[in-house]
Length: 331
Image (cartoon, rainbow, N blue to C red; front, side, top):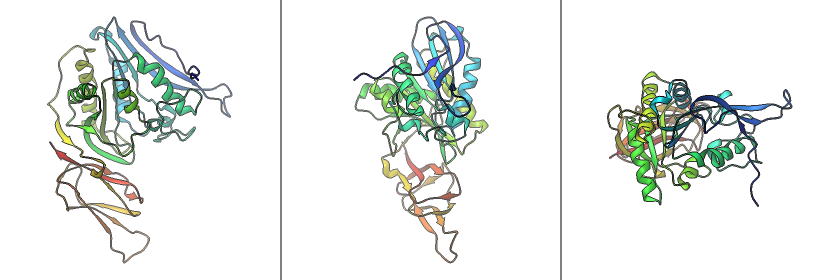
């Protein structure tokens, strides 16, 4: 049975040349507005025929590097310098972003676990459906900017996907390198089900994602990396004029999901190494202390590979089952 049309409408014309700033409008009937809407900002910058690049941030609402750089890009990108079209959605999960949450306050939806979505599902599923069935078919390449949000911190990296389709994998890897973050890798996630990444990959399109810092804030030096990176990606895809800027990335390898260190206790974490530090297998990298009972020895967590600490849990308190670290080899 075919899916019904998306309930989302838009105030922009995707086929018109020039610069348009508008909204995706998702009906949201609530106590204080029976005929209310979720308003998701969108920009379309178009100049004649050419490829379409779809750029997004705020897939998780507590990640700010992407929204910041993309709203600046939407406000400054000159259509005379592009060939084709750039579609920019700085805050995909606008309700989550407005609430400074990873997930939506409307339905607790984690947008990046609900693709391809449904037009008749929850509000977050309806956003996923619009991206899947309306925006993705317009695109020739996709960039989705992430950082560690309020609970993680990453070294700044751009990522492509490991895919069965070797041609699509190769084009994504070259594009990730063109971003020119300090590090570049292939994505290894603990949970890939329902991710935007896979929907784009199944469409056979080049896809680049990132993990750029985190801690629920922004930093000037990482903002500079992202601002440069989004323009580099557009240059690489032939949408924006100009040459790539910055130095080539250092390739790192996340070997598999065993590169993650998972806490098996609750407690207060003590880091023994800094983010980005070199590590060796068996080296203690963190201790988790029991703050509720004195006289208890802390649980020590050790590196499982030789390489570097590429991600760490950010808040001081951890819970059993939390990923507290991700390790990577230097390629």
